[in-house]
Image (cartoon, rainbow, N blue to C red; front, side, top):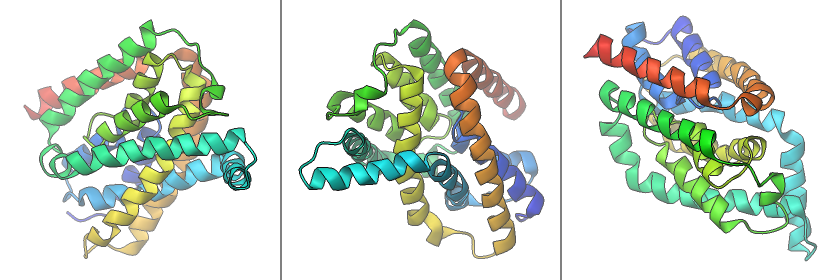
Length: 267
């Protein structure tokens, strides 16, 4: 069965929620065709849904994004600016992400979009996320990425963001895990993670749009993007005002439960 309004609504909803919560949007989207009984629209369609979540980040953090551009402009003129350094750290993290993504991209897209691999990634990275969050002490706040080049923090977060090219890993979950090991508090890590996702979201989308299925109708695709945008806004707000305070344990448990269901039902 081909994609329709109902299917793209589900795709948009799952993408919007799972992109920013540490449960792996790519893993959930890769499993949806089996759940909905439709043809797999492929990685290109999954990434098209990222348009909505990318715009959600832009809208929610519009002031911070504007301040970063202003900061970069002032630094060009020789005037130090904390938000300029923040932007440079985001660029540095995405260089690391790009390198990892290039190395593993083909393998992840062709070999790792299978339920068994997704289930294993859900379990392993869920446990890693919980251990890092549970036993790490917060010492570094937003200032970690402001007023200086935070090479270690930015590079490690970028590397772990790149590993999320594998379905089931979770971009937000992996970056939060390494940030907690680096002793960065959840709020600072979460905001930096949102910001550093923008080049990845829009870059990946532009690279794959030409590979969209030719039979796909434009209306369902656009509707899915709208749904992912609205769900993404809700997920960002939920993350910043609840997850930051409560920790990542509930999401590690959710990942474990989903992985067990996948293994029981499909194997």
